[in-house]
Length: 437
Ligand SMILES: [Zn+2]
Figure (cartoon, helix red, strand yellow):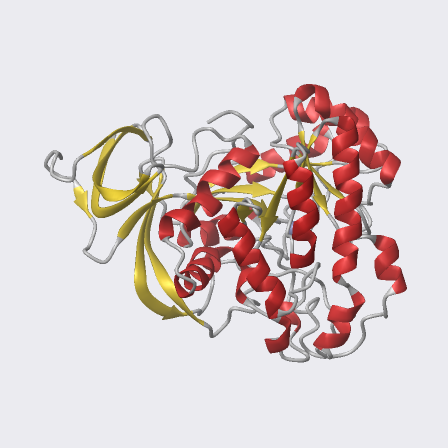
């Protein structure tokens, strides 16, 4: 099975140029000049750029157990439609949570045969399961997620400082990765309670200091154990100096942010519109601009969706109460156009965006076949029209609630290939192990 795709603009690891990408049996075999193609090659339209398939290392699929929130078939169809050819499933909000070898087996069994893109798995680190971490690591999870405060679901409790250090110490000898939801319980307990429709009141209930305090704890534990950690969904621009200082001093910590923190600003969130509720919250525009600057400076490593849907009923759109609504933003399918719209407005090029959304998450998750158009990598390709605009309409994920609804975004994913096959929503995906294909 061979596929050759050529374009006047191809985003390659070394930059953008006209090229032809040759593939066989789902793997890139050569990257040649534009004119060096056999008969039958696919030529992209003049307004299309060929990108590597994106890697989204932060997706809550929720199946089994809360499949009415989101499932493997719908989440991966949304991914394929959005140019994302690999997703890494978060260990919580499904039941069972992926905190044991047996739960990992259950997840894989449920996902097998119904995924439209490739899927890898995070394990979970919770109180009392430190003995499960190495077996799950050996079984191929890409790393472990933990919470430093209440996760919102009872089956996934947070780690205290001793638990955090025990998990890091267990993972350090095998160079395992611990990723953390970094908000501090005590800072939040001291803040006013969120209640009602006021977005300002919700924002005040989860202050930036909660992120900074938790990141401080994570940095200290990472430094002391020599392990590798990662901050998920950074929303707080004021945390950047302490992360920069930690990294400069050799602490092995990486950082991600999300499309919603780069797109929206607290000043513009309508009161009562709980589609915007997530934790940590969307902060003021100054934080958003600090995150953009940090990405460009290399102080934030990657951008991934944190796609975390629930049923419309749990979003409490009926009452619009930020205290009662489930926190989580659904936007997997529009991640690329959302980030590209913001990048383009700030003079950032497509190659940089692809670095944040393909190469860097593939590296974080330890997926060597993914994240770039290069010989030996999987033939995961996207035809992207960067100058075409569209209004966000019905999305493929199970419950179509999203704060992007009705928003005009620039950049349209026209076609996606997964390992050389058109990713049309049919179950072509594979389940991936860390380091594997
Ligand atoms: Zn999440």
